[in-house]
Length: 126
Image (cartoon, rainbow, N blue to C red; front, side, top):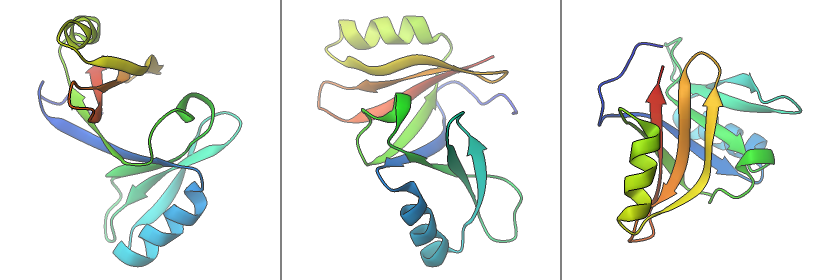
C-alpha cells in the first residue's frame, strides 16, 4: 500500500450484521465487484468499482472484533502516531471505541468517538 499523507482520508468500511446482503445491495446499486478478505473464521469484502482492480471500500460483518462497531460508513484518517492521537482524543473528550488493532504489514488503527458522538478510525501506516 502506498503511504498516504497524514490527515487524509484513505479508506471507508461499512460494518453490518448481514454483510453478504449489503455486499449484494451495493453491487447491484453501484456496480461494485467484491473480493473476499480473510478475517480468519469468516471473510469480509473489499469492494471494487467497475473497470478497476483497486478496492475502494470494505463491507464487513459485525462479528469478532467488529461486533461493537455501529452500522455506518466509517472513514479512516491517516495519522503520524496512533498512540499520540489516541491520547489526544481522550484528553479532548473523545473515547476509544475499538483497538488499537494491527493489520499485518500495513499499520495499526483504532476506532474513536469524538465529543459530538461521531465515529471514525485513525490509521498509522508502517
